[in-house]
Image (cartoon, rainbow, N blue to C red; front, side, top):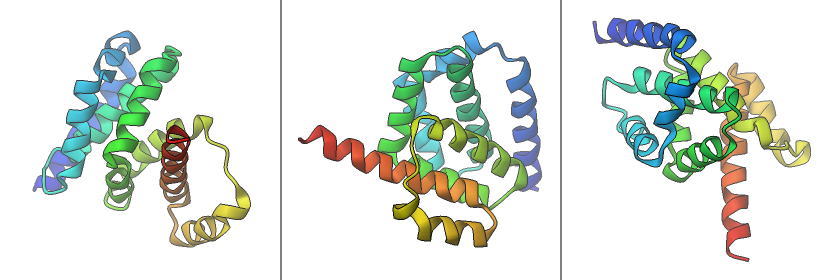
Length: 155
């Protein structure tokens, strides 16, 4: 069954994440590789989504561990620009292993985003009721952050 292979690949990549040295993982944080991974996510009919989630997670974690702020910000910006975060949120509803990775990835995205409780109250309430609050709040914040970045760049 394809789902079993996805699970096995996800578990394997997650375990590799623990032994893959951050200095090697951060090399994949370049624009070319991030764009490729985002394109894989956007093609939801592909069987490589679980692997891609695990790889992006490893790259973001490596950037964070190494305090590679430029690479981390560039990767985050590319993920936002490509709207791949929407597919990350979709993946969190499909499988518990992918859910954990995607939620942790969202936490990495939110490390520099301040939550406006008034503006996001409805979204947070809905997210808490649906059982996947961290991820849905993350996606909401990433969209808000992305729109704020766009509006600031045109000023």
